[in-house]
Amino acid sequence: AGERIWTEDEIPESAAPFKPLAIRIKDKEGRIVDVARSAEALTVEVEYEIKKDIQGLRVGIYLQTSQGAYLFTAFDTDMAENYEKYGVRKSGRYISRCEIPAHFLNERKYVLGMNASSYRVKSYFTDEHALSFGVDTAGAPGKQWMERRTGVVRPDLGWKIEKV
Image 1 (cartoon, rainbow, N blue to C red):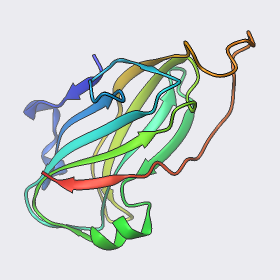
Image 2: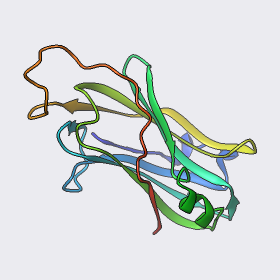
Image 3: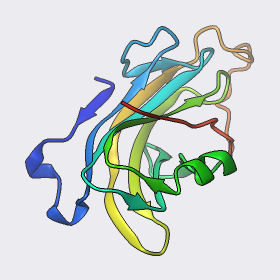
Image 4: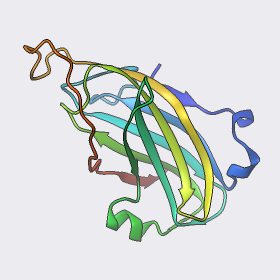
């Protein structure tokens, strides 16, 4: 229902020192939802723990249609300031979050995957089908047209990282 929490037995030992805790979709009020509104921004949160410092860690998402077509991939260190600030991710608990803007996703089911890796060094954890959610276009611009909208995007998601 808009959130996936990983249990200990779902996390391979090879993920260490990275430990995924949860991935969730939130609406503009901060509520966890499994159906987002196209006319409102939605937030994707990835919560995780790091048992010891990791150099070059990037935590990201893959957004796909339910048929498996990739819309985009984005990482929390795509922006230069995050890349520089978090070149070494210190041990602790974190939430990496990004916002998918309003009027961006069309009505359908989507699959959200997540990845934690150090580029060309190590893949710590990947779950390509971590969470499914739907989008409702009620009130969205262009609803007067009956056809379904199509397209592929590569957005800047405005990632923010906080140590919690």
